[in-house]
Length: 88
Image 1 (cartoon, rainbow, N blue to C red):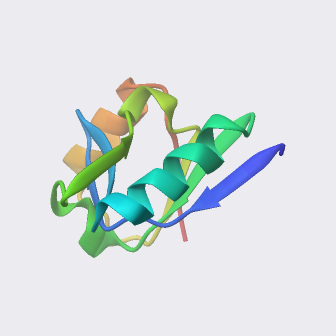
Image 2: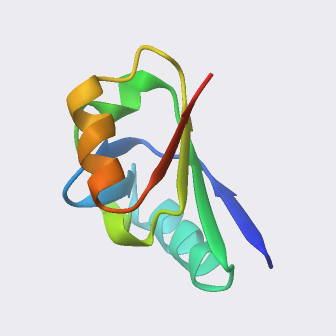
Image 3: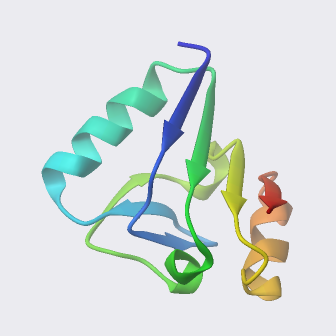
């Protein structure tokens, strides 16, 4: 696939995107592995830290689409990892 659009139960700017359980993480990890780009779609409440199981390191996130309530410090750290952050 060209692009994998993925949800997230938690995003840590240094560690990446997390799922709530191992099964969801496994599916998301495989989707990202078979796509050229991994786009995370998550509201700003998910940018407050990690969840149960990491499925994608921060450096592998191509883009994050989130709302304008995203914490500026987290957005800046993600951008330093090369993540394009789009706030809508």
